[in-house]
Amino acid sequence: MKVLVPKKSLADTLARVERIVPSRSSNPGLSLLRIDVTEDGMELSGSNMDVDIRARFAVDAPGRGSYAVVGHVFSQVVRALPGEDVQLDLGDDEMQISSGSYSTKLQLMSPSSAPVLNFGAQFGGSIDAAQLARALSAVKYAASVADFQAVFRGVKLELADGRMRAVATDGFRLAYYDLKESTGLLSEVIVPARSVDELLRVLSDGEVKLALEPAQLSVQHGNYSLNLKLMDGTFPDYERVIPKTFPVSITLEAGRLAEAVARVALMADKTTNNRVDLFVKGGELRITAEGSFGRSQEALPVLQEGTDPEIALAYNSKYLTDALSPADGEVRLSFSGSNSAPSVVTDLGDNSYLAMVVPLRTS
Image (cartoon, rainbow, N blue to C red; front, side):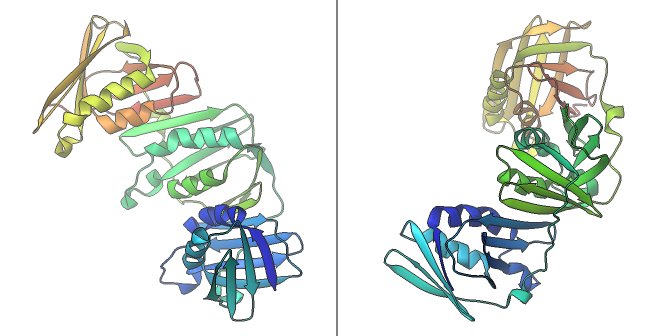
C-alpha cells in the first residue's frame, strides 16, 4: 500500500507521539508504534503504560491496513527527510520511505506485537482546552520529582459542580489554580505530573472532552486521544496548612521580583539550597545571597502592609521564582512569620492562582 502525506503533518504528529513511546523497554512491544490506515486517514498509536496516545491525520491512501514499526527509528528518519512530501510503501515485512531524492527501508513488525489500546468514544465531560492548559501549567512545577513521594508526584484535579481546581505540592511548596466552570464530571483524581506534561503538549484551542474510567482519565482533543493512568493514594489536606494571617505583606511586579531573585541567586551557595535572604523594612525589599565566589544584593521598592515593621526570611531561590512564574503583573507576597512558617504568593491580576513556599530554616 502506498500512502502520501505532507512531511510537516507526519513529523509534527510523530514529535508528540514518539515522546510517549519508549525507545528502550524491558517489554519490546512498548517500543513499537502502531500504524493504522483507514478511509479517514492514518492513525499512530503507542503507550508507555502510564499514557496511551493516538493521533489521527489526513493522508492520501487507497485502502486499509495495520502495521507496526520501531517508533524512535521511524521518527528519526522522518525528521531527516529532505522533501516536503513523504511516500510510505507499506508491505508485509518492510516499509519504504521516500522523500525528494532520498529513500530507505524499515523493517515492519506484526501489529499484534504492539500494545492493545482502547480509546473511549463516550465522554461525559468537557472543558476549554486553553483554560485547562492554563490551570495545569500554573501548578505542575510544585509536584515532586522524587519517586518515593508517592502522590506528591501527581497533580490533583478536583472536579466539582461549577468549578475545577488543579493543585500540586511536594511538601515544601504548593500551588493551586481554580477554574470557575464545570467539566460535567464529579470526582477527585490524581494524574502523574509526567503525564500532565504530555497532555499539555497536545492542548491548543477548542474543547477537550473528558471521561473517567476505572483507574484512568481519558481525554480527546482535536486529532489526539489520550488515556492517562491515575495514581492511587490520598492527597494531603493541603488547605489546612495555608496560612490565613500575615504580619507582613509586600506588593510589586512579579517579573521584577523574579528577575531580581534570579540575579542575586547567581552568587548563592548551590550546596545550601540556593539560599537567598529577604529583608523587608520601611517599604523596601532587600535581597542578598552569599557563596564561595562572592556576595550579591539588590533592593526594590515595595508596597508594605501589615502589623510588623520588618521581617527577615531565607528561601530556596528556585522555589520562589517558580512560584512567581505563572503570575503576570503585580503579586502580593505575604509572610506568615519567621523561619518555617509558610509564605503565600497571590496574583493580584488573577485570583485563581495561589502559591505557597516554605522558607528555609535559619536557626
